[in-house]
Figure 1 (cartoon, rainbow, N blue to C red):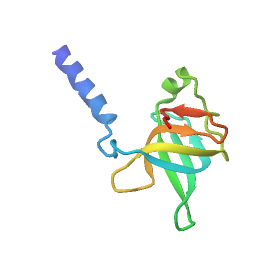
Figure 2: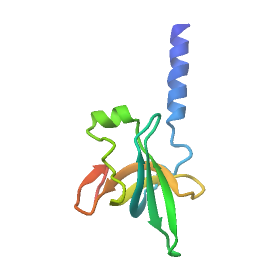
Figure 3: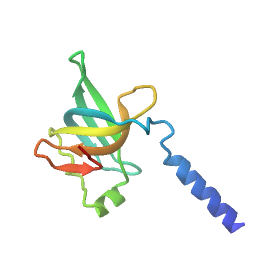
Figure 4: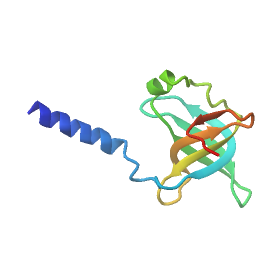
Length: 118
């Protein structure tokens, strides 16, 4: 009975962290200015203002990991400072909304975070 319960909890956790709603086989790259870094549970969010092809500013929401895990990797609330220019790679959500899951980031000074391959 306990084993069955553990299996169910494991499956629910996997489903919660699934990338089913994202284009997991595609990388989208955006460049813009950090509006806010929400270093909060259950997931961190990076808000980025991006100028689109029409010249309008769109706010992108990029979901990242849980703060506890990010802290253990050396990241903190100042990792994405407000007003900083950044290029972010992400798995965009299905449907094309300006949102997705974090893959990697690069700052103008060349500093990279996450998975970034040239």
